Each structure stands twice: as structure tokens, then as C-alpha cells.
Length: 392
Ligand code: GLA
Picture (cartoon, rainbow, N blue to C red):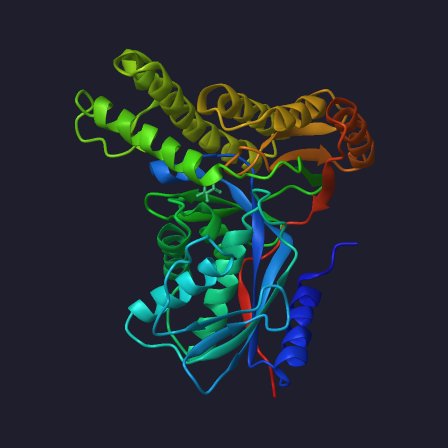
């Protein structure tokens, strides 16, 4: 059974007490996410439609007398840093997300006080469910609470995104940090990544969200990801010689793009084609969901997957296999890869009552073709980051 958010927080609290010999002052937690639709659109100033899931990272925190951050003592992840000397590590460590957040909070003007921290969570790492954003947000909420800082949720999400750019070297968009911060139980979040205007859209009852993990780890995600970003910028640069004033692919309507695509080399053309059509799919899918038109929503999910596979080229055979198996299964509304791609997870929306049958089909079909078991689980849609003081 999946442990509740509360019990993840309690695990962090009791591990903290065991290893530091005192209760923490506060515990924060932040969720992982799936993206229902709108992939690789966030860094093109476009639209995304993610939802926070009931897998979270918790950070229990308490004060220290010196200027150090001490994390997870007594475990394989034992790490210590001086707050006056926070740099990205040379070999890319998990702690970069946390020290990045601490460093950028300090950059706002107030030095942080020393802290003991215990991190505990159940967002699978490297599966495309944003374990890094969950860690960044939980760390940020914990440090903000303990240091009595005032910072809005949107600023917090932006700061965590910067930590990922500057300390983890991935030039990610704002989606993951935003949803981990501002997600809402039983709702997806439609976000305009240019203005950061957002709207929660309820997921209709009677639908299960099935997460299907290929088990393929996204080893190349960083460099391939940054390369896709570059290709999109190249497209904007070339198109802007005709489309005066555009600054991002967000500004290019799909119909106009079809008239101009000949200006681009084949690879850049395909990348741009995905982004401009995907933006339109997000808007249409949000309308479909508001109207309760699930079959339209599902159709758009499949179209999105095809576009990511064929034009953006960020899928992989295992993701395609899972989506194809879903497409032929009774009760599946729609399916697609979610997150950056190159491995990781697909998601399927399934009509309640059909989920066990779909899982049996996916297990058998995936094992038959790959010799491995996928990891399949139903997720609930949860709230964004939160923090609470612990009486002590
Ligand atoms: C990763 C990034 C996000 C977004 C997705 C692809 O999850 O962190 O900003 O670009 O990939 O949609």
C-alpha cells in the first residue's frame, strides 16, 4: 500500500529524532508530478497541464549553532556543507538540489542559520516524476519556515527552478517546480508558462490515473534535454526573420507554422512542429476536461505521444510499447509518455473498474516483449508543498 503523505512526513520526523537526538522544529513535504499533456512546452513560454501525485519528499529540519547544513547523518547519503561555501558538486550529487535552494535563498539577502535536516521520500528517482522538484520544494519550504523568511509560492517555485539550472545543470522549464508548489488535490493545473497565470481544473470522478514506469533510467536526459532547448531557440531565431516580434514558439500559431516550416532544416522543423501543435493540444484538452469530454481528452493524449515520438524524438521503445498496449485495452481513455522522456514513465487515464484488467494486459505485454516487469501503480492527485511546525 502507498503510505500517506502524513506518514512520509512522520518517517522524516522520526529519522531526524533518531539521528540528531532531538525533535525537529518543522517538517515540510512536496509532491512529485505527472504531466497530463503539454510536454516540452514550458521552456517555449507555452502551456502545460500537470497534476501533483501522492508520492512525496519530506524534509524534517531543526536548528544548529554553527553555520553548517547537515543532512541524513548515519546513512549512505550523509552530507555536510558550510552555508558560506555552497557550490554545485563536481559529480552531480542529489544534495545539489538542496544546497542550490539554500544558496539562492541566501542570495536574496539574509544569511540562513545552520540546520540539521533529514530527507525521506517515496518519489522514484530518475523516473520522470520530478523527484528533483519535490526535493527542491520540500527543502525550500523547510528552510523558509525555519528562517522566518517571507516569499510567495510563485517566487519559491522560480527560485527552485533556478537551483536546478545553476546547481544541477538542467535548463528546465518552470512546470515541475510550479506544480510541486501549487498543486491541488483532485485537480490538474493549467499553467501559462509565460505569464504564470494558472487555473485548477477538477479531474472528473470515476477516472484512475495509472502510472506505468518502464524502469528505463534517463541517463542522458540532461544533455539531450538542453539540446532540444537549443533546437527550439534556433527555430525561433530563423522564424523571427519573417514573424516579426516573436520571442518564443508560443507566439507561432500552428496554421502559420505550416506556411513557414520550409525555412527550417528537417530536425529543427520537427522540434518546432511538436511544440506549436502541443500548445494547441493543451488548450483543447483543458476545454475537453472542463466539459467532461473524456474521449476528446484521451485522443489528444495519444496525439501528444505520437508527436513526442515522431517529431520531438524523446520517447523510447519501452514507452511506445506501453502506450500501444494501452491503446488496445478496454477502459483506457488515453495514454502518453510523461515528463522529459528518454525513458521514465507513461501515464494512462482509465475508467474506474477497468484498471486491474489494464494492468494485467500491460504486465503480460511488457514482459512478453522486454523480458522485464514494468512498475504499475494508481496515483491519487494531491496538494502541493506544505510545512508545519512541530511543538517541542
Ligand atoms: C522536465 C523539465 C520540465 C519540462 C519537462 C518536459 O520534467 O523539468 O521543465 O520541460 O521535462 O515537458
